[in-house]
Image (cartoon, rainbow, N blue to C red):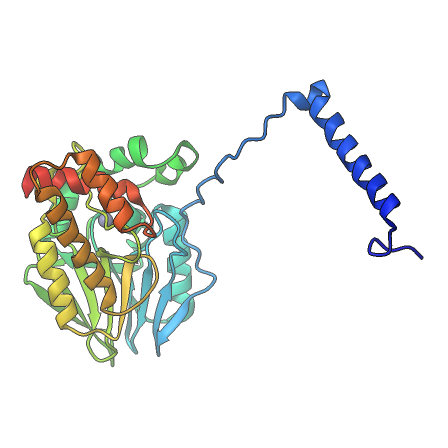
Length: 331
Ligand SMILES: [Zn+2]
């Protein structure tokens, strides 16, 4: 029996000629001539929260990882003996329904709270699904921002952020404010044997960002104050998001405070889990950004190119430009 390895050289030559002839005919045939080889990038994955693989990072503390899919946030489900707290519910009704279903599975019979790390659509524009079954709770500053800018954000996401194939995710979205808010810089929730702190610095990445922190377990959910190996989302997209909706200096204060808390585990808004190296990297990037843009003779294009090269492995370079423009305008 003849195997390929065992082919004698004449037969190998014949085989090669046959292959080449086949290629040549394919190239020269009129039908194939029209078939240009193009390298279409794969379609962006649908940003629907995939709840099939929750990870338990501490007893009763679950993460639904974002799988590094754009516009999917990392989501938390924190289970106490009395209540369960959901941190963010994703973009759209399907995502929120998935998260609510998983919450009921992981915490049967518990009273449900929903909080959102901040008012941007991919973190909580689906909260209506929770309205009748949960208490929605976050801070006053975020609630105010949501009330005055929620519709603008919804319209802006539909027209300028979501690709055509994903715009339907916003169909049927009803802007849903919280049932309750807190006015203080920090609020504590007791879920039954589990203490959770919600902490805000006012406007940083957005008006009313908050972290969700479990002091005993050392687990911290940072929302979009933190991105991991991705360019931080400096969301300067006027007229949808104005310069006064961001405060980079306060954002840096928040990052330093997060580092001081020495959390054991940090869950960024987007990207993989880690420790304090995540806020440290975001702070270092902001330092580079200020330094680069600060030098008088650097054009915006040069600054962007420099930052792209310096952080060559980071994802989402589309957020460099807005960051540069924000620094130019606000400092
Ligand atoms: Zn955000």
